[in-house]
Length: 343
Ligand code: TXA
Ligand code: MG
Image (cartoon, rainbow, N blue to C red; front, top):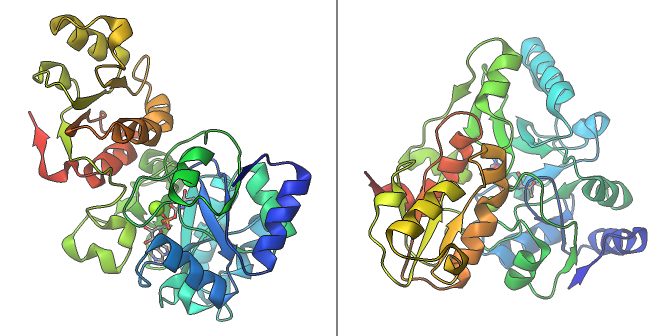
């Protein structure tokens, strides 16, 4: 059930969390499906509702930097790692950066998939922060989608997946892509999942190139967000190199997702489609002018819209690799494009 994020409704959602229930709330990245991070039964319900494997650990959402140690134990880090953690937290939080840190022993291991590390994040959304403060202070929340499906960027996306859950409607999420997951427990900081804070931003802050974990078949065990198939629409997705979708053949019943409007228009012209009939012909553009922030914000939304048409296939165009492009391309690969980069 979708409700406005009034004080009264946030309190109502907080009461659900305190009672061990699940709620969905907006963050600046995507909508989360949250429960009390210290309640094992509530945590188990998240895995059950999402059909998520128990080995895939959750992110614990906290209200502010002083609360980091509610879930993470910084005292067991080396001095260097601890100051790096505090420095990065100070620079980027609240915001779309999730830190992997040693876990507090009191945190149920269900929240961390049995690992002795925990993912912590302080969302920038005022609604999320208020919900966390009014409930139990630590909300474990994956993205509010069934395991392996597209992440929700609007309350209605969540409702399509989980009709019975209380959903605080914060409108469309500003960023549209999940947080960057950064491991701080293994000597040097290492990016496990690309996301809202770019590797360039992290490298700048650290004063040297930030390490990235390569995606491997075995990566699923260290950070299941690295699993190759994830964020998938129901239709098969074929990925085209940047600026090459325009040359693809026009096949009725196939959805086309262009990086920018200019390419959509060129494709429409070439195939005798009037610009006003673009939507009817399943043509979508991720941005007006190719700005990657706009593309990121529209990515899941457009994939949801295309997938809703039940097209025979979805053809999508990659982003240039710099900045947010890395996270955009990562999500496109995981949406099924990894086998099929054309041109
Ligand atoms: O933006 C986001 O991060 C959203 C919003 C709702 O906050 N949440 C989100 O959660 O994307 P989820 O569960 O879909 O992704 C969590 C990622 C997974 O890739 C998981 O494997 C990784 O974080 N992760 C969690 N705990 C970890 C740990 N201890 N070590 C390594 N990876 C971890
Ligand atoms: Mg997810």
